[in-house]
Image 1 (cartoon, rainbow, N blue to C red):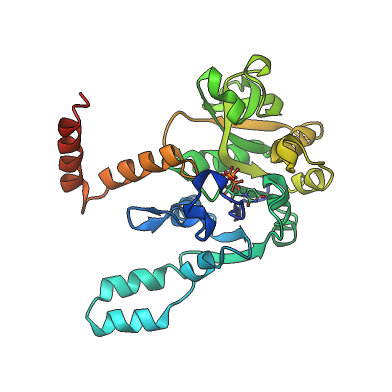
Image 2 (spheres, protein in one colour):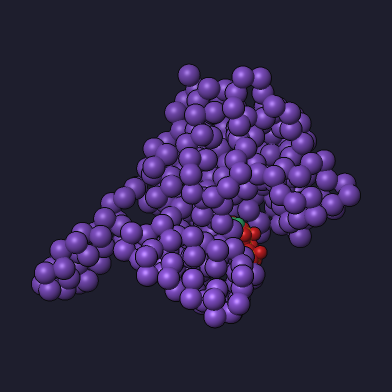
Length: 294
Ligand code: UTP
């Protein structure tokens, strides 16, 4: 059995240019989906998969993320005084849901560079990476941890996209692994290929599980597409030394750093909430009728 996966790294230091003007002063990872910021969903997913040591890669403009996961004694006391015990507990729980650490990326030099900032904290252990603006519902991360435990290789989440959209993603050429459901072996990785050059329509989707060897490859990676240090390039080099597996899935992923996907996330999460679903469903029905959408 390979070394257990205990740590998760959440890169959240990007500039968020696709979500301007909101993201000018408030991190896109703090966008509310119903009543929780996006990054809280991401941390809950890591904790559910058994990873309770969490390192958030942040930046000088994003201090509010640290406050969200800190204690707030005045608020807790005010809620207690009003008899709002459940709310007080909820606020307290945010600081104890996991061991949450922060490190700053001084300059947004790319996702690969952001993950490289975790080297000292992670040390010589396997670790998961969950993008801080990416909500994932369903057991994808757990499936990746199980796949790692069985094979001992790095694993990346993969989903098929429409062929014309592949140039927005890292793209993988891969073949099924016999007898292992949802598992493929990756033979080639390219960052944002032109549609006509793409080796497949399998896109890399916001969740990674790496052996610590990735840090050596990141350190040797030069800026790639967009002048950024790309994790896809570091992964492609890692494949010269170790196997790289893919864990395939088909639904439940929301890139909330993209406006249209953020809206989809809000609608779907609200419909999953016992306290809101009934009323919200009626609002959707009324809107569809009023707008003549069907
Ligand atoms: P994105 O590419 O979605 O983030 O990176 P971005 O660069 O902030 O977005 P746009 O394209 O300008 O809108 C995925 C995740 O990686 C983090 C982001 O914060 C996001 O959660 N990231 C990206 C970093 O931490 N550092 C970087 O240098 C780049």
